[in-house]
Image 1 (cartoon, rainbow, N blue to C red):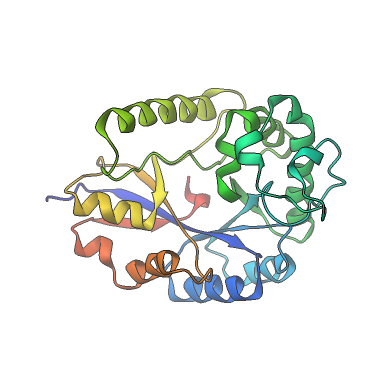
Image 2 (tube, one colour):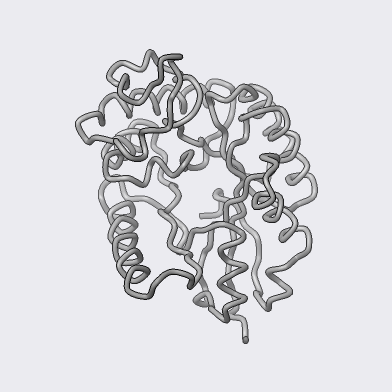
Length: 260
């Protein structure tokens, strides 16, 4: 396969601040130059250490990993009871039960998470979310609200870099729906800067193995999850360390969200 030129790739580590183990793994990847960006989980047990560590990497971008599915809220969580367990922590139901009627409460919690990171001295470059919570219809207006409040114009797409492993019609319908959502993200005020493609490191590796291609001049965001300790997530870092994308013929340069 002949590789198109001038592809720019942002390699973002999610979950910075989740735990000491995750922090150590992400810092190692930053030191090795394997990643160019990371997003901070403001309600993780290691969020303060993650924020302090950003000062060591002035060329990387650091965003907020908006969270409504794990750990304890940062705000008083008014109006979010339906998404909390008996222990007061998010119970993971948000992805399947998100309601537009909760937009104000969602925006309040996300604003508290962003403000916590800003108050720790981090220049927030962009937004994404834990378990892709921001990409559901129930969270769209909350996302736009916090973008306006904080002037954040860079946001992760919904995943559109999909290996050819689904039934053809289902995959086509999925891509159409994602194209509509991504267009709304970009053009509903406040207008938003995004990559052209988003998926995991493994997604892109599989696409290239299937002789797929990336349009010349594109910007691609790849997510990875250093330190979570599963074979799938460990493989993401191995692929980066092995320069596996280059070995499959992809000619690219690495950038950060600051370069969008």
